Image (cartoon, rainbow, N blue to C red; front, side, top):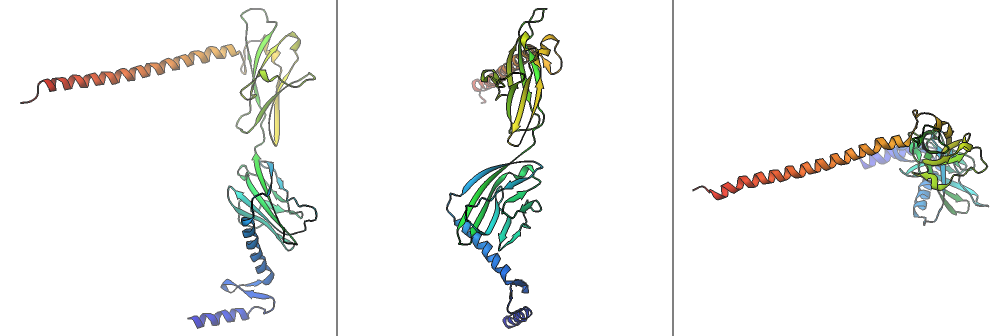
Length: 315
């Protein structure tokens, strides 16, 4: 058997040109330069794993459906000979390589068909998906054998939707319209997280809002309006690192009309919320009292049953 296998191997080798081809597994003839490239790739990956910590790092933001460019930074005079792009987290995958002037991106990863390696060795990913957030690395080796590793953290965000602003008014008991109006403005962006809320007073030079009037991480704004604020509008701005949107209301208009959907008195809200809270608390106390009494009653019944048996033992 050993002689037969050796003879077969010799016949396979003989079918390949002796000067420019080598024989590898299953009798496939591979170009010598490509085989050396594979060995070089594995050597670089091992080299990167053994490199000490201290590589430069950067944060990159992208939007779902858009594109992002992961830039490979090179110091002045650094002539790149080889480069390797990898995904490190949430899964470790090979994304793109550059060897001897040729690029390769057809690696089996979650970015297959969505990765493009540019001539400056920066990696472009598109279209982005919500699950593309993670950590990436690029290993650059120059013609002198020096290595440089760069780490990049990609965070992909959804586009911010237009927020919804509700107006709650403290209605006075007087029949005449009040001279001042206390207003709560509540802002909410539906079905999204990782956003920041801020407010802007329109029509004035100073757009800033006093922090004392902000609640719940800037989502609620309390303002006091007078007759001179009839045309003053407030804008709620929701934003994340890649997008933003706003909604604008003129709260004074709601101070002289009856409560409407989205423009209710926050005293009315309290009149509903407080009684419900009291009822729930009372129900919890009654339930605990009933549970305690039921347990005590059951215990007394057991004691009453045991006592006669103790006093009149069987003869």
